Length: 334
Image (cartoon, rainbow, N blue to C red):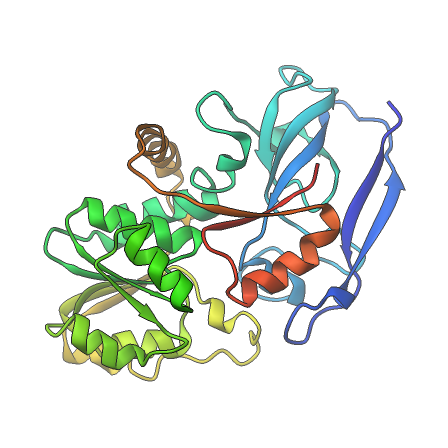
C-alpha cells in the first residue's frame, strides 16, 4: 500500500507562547509495516494544555524532539495491519501524534467501541486526559459531598466542566471560574452551575466572598497562579484543594509561580493534593463505564470545538492557550 504521511513537526522550541513559526508541515513516504505493526488513518487528535510543556523540552510530560512529530493523543481506524487480532477498519485510540497516518506497534494502542459513543468521544468525555481525569479526580481525591461549596477553575474546559457536573450529581453547590461573559453564561445556563466567576472581568476573591461567605469546602484547580491564591484565601475550615493542572504556568515553566497564600492551609486545617489519572490505573475502566452511562442517558453535558485540517493544529494550540475554547478542543485530521 503506497501511502504518504503528512505530519506537524517541531522546528523551534517556544520560549513562551507556541507560535506557528515553531512548527512545519512535512510530507513523507511510509515504509512497509513490520510484524506486529498497524497503520492508522488518524481521524482526530486532542489539543491539550500539557502539550505546552512537551514542546519546551522539560517538565512532567513526555518531550518532543526537534524535527519530531508533535505528540498527541488521537483516534482513527486501521488501514493496514501486520498484527494478529487487529483488523482493517478497527477503531483505535493511542498516542497517534499530529499526522495523517500513524505507524505503531499494535500493543501500544487500544481498540475502542464506536457503538457506545462516536469515535471523537474517546478523546473527550471518555478520554484519559479529559473525562477520565475529571472522574478519577472527583471520586478518589476531591470527594465532594452534599452541601459542600465546590469551586472549579477552567470550569468551561474539558476537565473542569465534567468535574463540576460530577460535584452537582453529589449534591454540592458548584461555582465555576472561567474567562469571559460567554463562558460564565455557559456555566450557569448550559451546565447548571450555581454560580460563575468571570476572572477576566471580576475580582475572583471578592466574588468568592459574595458567593461563598462561609468559605470553599473543595477546590478543583486547573489553573494555578493568581486564581489558586484567590481561592486559598477563601477556603473554609478542613477544606480540600485538588491540583489537577496549572495552565497559567505552562508558558513559564522555568519560572513557575507558587501559591503565596498556602499558609491558609495551616490556618484552616486544610489539605492540598495533586494527582494524574494514570496514578489510578485500576479506575480507568470504571470511569469510562460510568461516564459512558451518563452520556447515553443524557445526564452529562459535554461540548466540543473542532478545527478542521491538520494545518490548523498550531492555530488550535494558540486558541486553547488564549482561553478560546469551550469544552474539548480537537483537530479533525481526516
